[in-house]
Every structure is written in C-alpha cells, then in structure tokens.
Amino acid sequence: CPSSDREEADKYSVLLPTYNERENLPLIVWLLVKYFGESGYNYEIIVIDDGSPDGTLQIAEQLQKIYGDDKIVLRPRAKKLGLGTAYIHGIKHATGNFIIIMDADLSHHPKFIPEFIKKQKEGGYDLVSGTRYRGDGGVYGWDLRRKLISRGANFVTQVLLRPGASDLTGSFRLYKKDVLERLVERCVSKGYVFQMEMIVRARQLGYTIGEVPISFVDRVYGESKLGGNEIVSFLKGLLTLFATT
Image 1 (tube, rainbow, N blue to C red):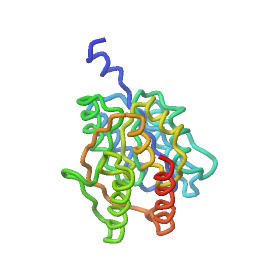
Image 2 (cartoon, rainbow, N blue to C red):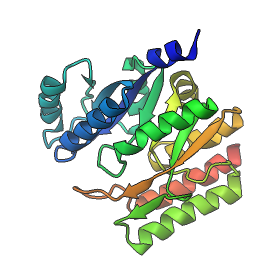
Image 3 (cartoon, rainbow, N blue to C red):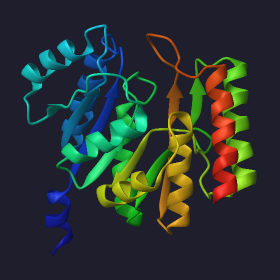
Image 4 (cartoon, rainbow, N blue to C red):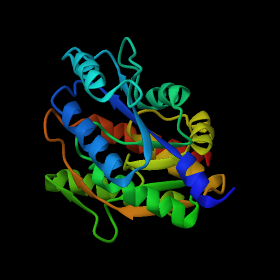
C-alpha cells in the first residue's frame, strides 16, 4: 500500500500507568492532546490506575468527559501490581499498532513524541528510546547522587551487557505493538530493572533500536520513586540478567 495510506492508518496508544498522580494527570493529558493534535497523528491515551488512594481515577474520569472516551481510555486495576503487569494490561486494551510508554509524573515531556514518531518512520525501527545521555539530552532537577546512580547503573549495564543503546533505564519509548508484546512476554524483572531488560531482550532478538535525545525533568509533584532499596534491587536484577543472557 502507498506509504501515505499506511501512515494515516497508524495509531499510537500511550500507556500511562498511574499511582497517586492526581496533580500531574490533567497536565500530562493536556500536553499529550496538544502535541498529538498539532502533529496530526491518530492516538489514544490508556490510563492504568493501580487503585490510587488520592483520587487519580476520579480525575481521569473527569478528563475522559472533557476529551472523549475514544481519546481517554480508563483501564484501572484494584491495587498496585507493578509496572510490568501494567504494560501487559495496557497492551491488551490498546487499539494502536504502535505503543508509547512514558511516566505520568511529567518527567517525560510529550513534546518529544512527534520526534520519536519521525525517527521511527525514518528508520523503520522496532523501537525508539528517549535518551538522556546523547545529543541535547539531559537531566534537570536531579541531585548529584541521583545522577551518579543513574549514570553508574547505565555504565555497569553497558559494560556487562553491551546492549547498543545509551539509555537503558529510561522509560520513555515508542514500540511497534507486536514487538512490545513479544518483549513483555520474555521479561522476568519487575520495577526499575524492567525497562533495561526490555532493551537487552530487544537486542538479543535482533530488533532495531532508534534513539532520540530528550531532556528529563525530575518529578514536579510527589516523591521520587527511586530510593536506595530500588538501587539494590536494580543491581541484583542486573546481575541476574547478566548471568542468564
């Protein structure tokens, strides 16, 4: 089929796992609607709320009334079940042939999404990853400890696994839907390591990876989810992954 037909048929499903994001959700949704609207791509936003006690779901319901249930799809779960399973849950309900995963806490700016899409189309990539460590990418609002941990985690991973991508722990990515399905099936890690395992498995399966420099802004509201205990579990997961690949 001619490429113009194919491009018009492309649809992008944004998976937004949320837990206590009531302050951030209206803004992230507004930004998504704005940048998708300006770039003209077909999209839907799938909000997967894990039983947030702060009323995130009620806010999402209001947003659905404003933007329409074809654009805002609510797929809540009763309790906090983790990121990996949130993606599996989200993929099942996604009607797009491409899936965008990102955080709902405004650390990932929707303005980069059209660049991800453009990059994907240019190279026909199986996945496109936002990178904080190349080109104009950067991290703002992080203290030195967080920067060192993130850089260190990426460095250790590069040395052990040679994955061929510069930012492995980032969670701002565009996937072909069938590729994401295959990767998620194979992933065993939970939490922070999950994002990295996805890239490593993608490399093993011979998938092509494009990168787009992004600036990453630390959480505007709420507590950062990356604490000391997560670093320990990250390193443990990394060593397990190294031992099994």
